[in-house]
Every structure is written in structure tokens, then in C-alpha cells.
Length: 391
Image 1 (cartoon, rainbow, N blue to C red):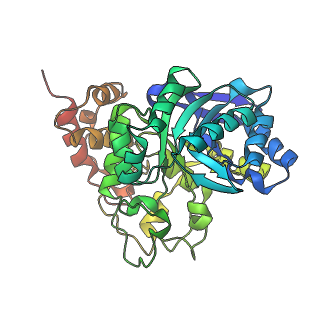
Image 2 (cartoon, rainbow, N blue to C red; image 1 turned 135 degrees about the vertical axis):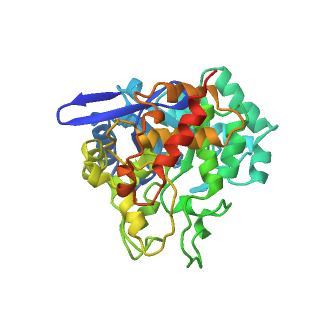
């Protein structure tokens, strides 16, 4: 889906089973408090004028919340808000807690400062360990979340995490409809951790492709229609500089955005903005060329990388003489082949493709364009055998 106004085109995607249509470029609000209030309000309103309609407010400080509230005033129906439950402001500091004496007034403060009586996505805030998961579940905290949902104060229940192990638990819980997760090319190469800050400390080895646990988590979310929104898509800007990038080479914002949006299950990437110009730079992705979005060539040529034989759904294989959407066939194959039985939802997605994998003529012209040496013709045969079985 897309929306046109003036010179921009914004595409929208369904946020999993919530059914909400969200802009694939979103707004992460954590930088708002660094600027004059009026200036930040104008940036949020400017983002809305560019078609951005999802905003995350994990921040507990009054200034950030007031900015978003003032920016949304008179235009609340435009915005889909991720509001966090358990993010509190105590003695001038951010504190994550499940203590109801702090949780309840902090969430009520969020509603008051956002000038609304509901948030679209009520987020179980920041769960990165099994111990923290246990602190949330079967307690007054989770009962409060459920009560808010039953009353319509939160329309859908979500969860934020950086850990794919916790993400999987949430996706399988039956409680959570969407997940805010940290995704970028660097994070995807490292195993699950409960301490994101130390993920790359002392790490000097080659990357060996997407961590299987993360890949499996994305596939599960796609299968179960658990929509993913993305935080930390730029790794705090570290990916923009070869000196700070774990790959030893630099990426552009468009490449990082495209990487996130090509992961299974992903609906929107929430970028942080200081200025209108940064909003423009992110929204420019919507009209960027394939070359401008090409993250695969950067990864393939990086000095610190080993990614042979893995499809990243980057689209380098196009065009196919038989008009097969190779990247989508590969994505559906990866999603389904890990299961004992092909999920009905994935089969339906495959059946909706304009051209089936069986149309492949084995010319292998696509393979000459693949940066990672994927045996595409063989994968088309396997996909056809998996999805096109005769009853």
C-alpha cells in the first residue's frame, strides 16, 4: 500500500495480526528531548506530513512525552503509538521496573502527556532475560497489562526486546501480537545475548552469516503473524563509518533500512531524527534506486565477513527471464522448510505468487548476479517440490 502527497510516496504494511497499516519508515522518539520543545514538535509534525504514522515512546521523561503529545494534538487519529509499560522516571532518571507503585502512575502520566486516552500498542517494556520475563509473567504487572487491554486503553499488546530467545518466547506466548526488536546487519551476525552493549567487545573474528537463532526467530514471527518493528537499525550510527562498523566498511541509511525491511516478519523500521533533513533522508528510501538500497554488495565485499551460500533476499538475482520473484520464493522456502509441515499461511503466500518456482528453466543467469554464491536453480527445484506437491 502507498500514499502519495506532493513528491513523496510512503509505503504501508500490515503489522502482523494487529491488522494496523503502518508506514514502513517509522519514528523512534528518543532524540526529541535533546532539542528545544517547539523545534522537536515541528519535526514530529513534519514526519507526519511525509506519511510516517508510527511512533515509539519508551522515554519516561516529561519533555519527550509532552513533545509527542503536542505534536499529535488535533491529529491523533493519524498516529499509531507504541507506548511502554514499565518505563518510569524516578528522581530525574529512567528506571525500568515492574513495581506497580511506579508502573501505574508512569503509564497514566504517559497518557496524560500524550493527550490521549489510549495507545495503539501497549508495550511490555524491555525484556532481555529469562529472569526478567519471569518477573513480568504471572504477576500484578502482567495482570495490569491485560486489564488495560480489556478496557481498550491499549488496543494491542506488544513487547520490546533485543534478545531473540525472549522474542521467541513472546511470539509463542499467545499474548503478544507484535514485537519491537533490534535489527541491523551487524546484530544479525552475533548470537543472542542479555547484554547488547557488550555484543562486540573483544570480537575480532569473521562474521559467518546470520545467527541461526535470529533467523529462526524472524521466520517464526512471519509464520505466526507477529509483526516486528525495528529499533537500532543504524547501530547508533556506527554502521555509517568504516572505523566504527564491525564489518570494517560503511553502510548508508538506505542500505540499513532496506536490510531491516527485507527480514521476515518486519513491518517498520523506527529511525531517530534530530532534524527535518534527517526525516527527508530516511523517507528518501521510498524512492531510492536498487543500487542505492544495495546492502548485499557492501556485506559481500566487507573485510570482516563470511556469508557464502546464504540468501539474504536482497534481490540481486533479478530479473528472471520467467518472471519468478526469486527472493520471495527463497524467503517462503526458508520459512517452510524448517517446519515438519508447510504452514498454511506460508503455502497461501506462495500460491499467491505470480510465477511458481517450477517455472525455473535452470539458466542460472541469476546465480551470476548473486553476491553470496547461492545455488538458486537448485533452490527453485526444492521450493517447487515442497510447495507444489500433487495431492
